[in-house]
Amino acid sequence: IQGRCTSLSETNKAGKVVNWRSKQGEIPIKGITSVDGVSLLTLEGASVIGGAQVAERFMGSMAGAGIDVLMVTQASAESSITIVVPENMGQAALRAAQSTFELELSRSNVNGISLTDKSLAIVAIVGEGMALQSGVSATFMSSLAKANVNIRVIAQGSSERQVAVVVDGDDASRALRAAHMAFTLSQ
Image (cartoon, rainbow, N blue to C red):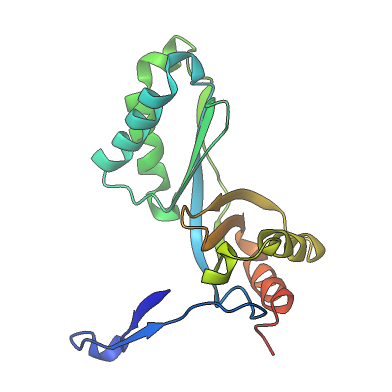
């Protein structure tokens, strides 16, 4: 994994390039991060109007409204799509989706479009070792379960180097502590 570290006070400087490659027996993740203040927007029951077109129109409506989409997850049957957006963009995202699917909603071809009314948070683990070692996601999920943190959404990066979950905002600190302890990053 390669990243660039720069000082927040000196953003005009290039910073330092940091490289990391996992070795057998090392802790498989190198970081845990969170994003507070997010909402879930879900489009449900749209499989009858074609999965590919639904996803394209749904994401297009977000792009057209200038909505930052932080995560995407889709049911395997393509009957629902959930996106994670910044909480302050939630109502605009809802209006954009409702406008795009107005006809389908009126004909009941789409069951509904809903926005969570509770503040949520993304918690993610990141590391190259995740792609090389089985059970990393299980360790992460188990740590959250033991800490009594309910997972609302799960997404894995296509590179297998990141797993992110959405949890209640009130549980974010507990989720971070649990993950740190599970991967011994707090020692």
